[in-house]
Length: 391
Image (cartoon, rainbow, N blue to C red; front, side, top):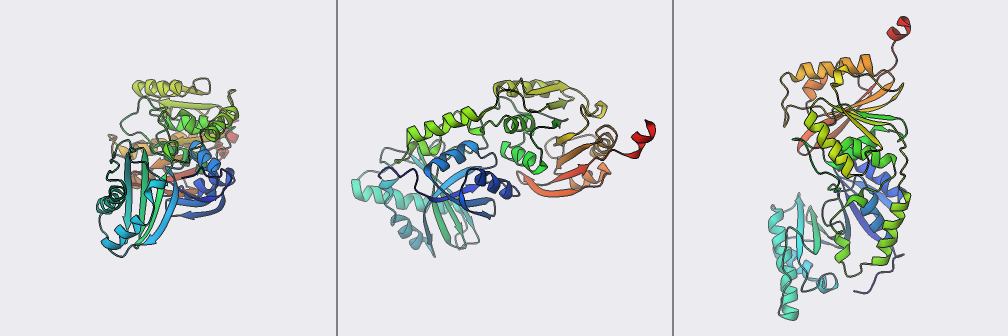
């Protein structure tokens, strides 16, 4: 396949988590993508090769950046096999390269995504074998070329996966706690909070520090892809433009700010979590931007007049609290009494316990943490009359 014109536009699909589609669309707008359309857990757009590289490096809420190569309808097994063979796979894959297929199937006559992936693999392999007498190998763990097949109501989109490993695996985490928050979800929650990247940001139950690090990366304008250790999927493509990617990478490095832009602080009552958070923060090179302390949230006070507080308290799913209702009541009391002037965001999968917070929500945003249905609850903690009377 000839080198693609880096200025030529093509379709791009960026996948994300349910509830973060609009956030991702904004990120793609910031990269000057065109024809942006929000779908279910995905955003489609049009861009150049440079923008495809930039999306992998810069999008904080994308899981994968896909380049569609064919759309077709597959009524049955024979149809799928024949349609897949209509693509000349030698344009995208060498005989000595490994490949893998991720298939997602919904509302179709095919029931099993693994079966669809197997059938697609057979069609590709058979094409090579017929043409050359040899076949490329499958490597499900670390393939050279990763393909994505999306089938909905028997309409198939076959794409090249430009990301390779999922983009949520940033590369800065050395240690996690028992219920680590997905980095894409953490970044999405911070974006949904509307934090201005300048005012105080607090995570008072910081665990291994994911909210803190994602917030610091935003404030310092650090592209999340700069932490990545594994190569991107597009680096094994036939039209890979190494000098173009080097330019994109160096431009991202130059945009990062070293001087701290905001006060970012984390607390945790567990010394082991504080250590884990600090190790991750240090690994990310952000120890000069983030403060992390061992402290009981219920005994803390706001360090400034206003700011944004984001927390992910236990749900009684993976971390079990002795009295979850009392825990949530204490969260509400502490927010009301000690964090007046702040916008507080509580992300929880225990909607029953959340009622014990006892404060009025100004927003309730549905999200998922893995398979757990969650809400991001916003509490606007106005300065009450009690403080005025006391002064």
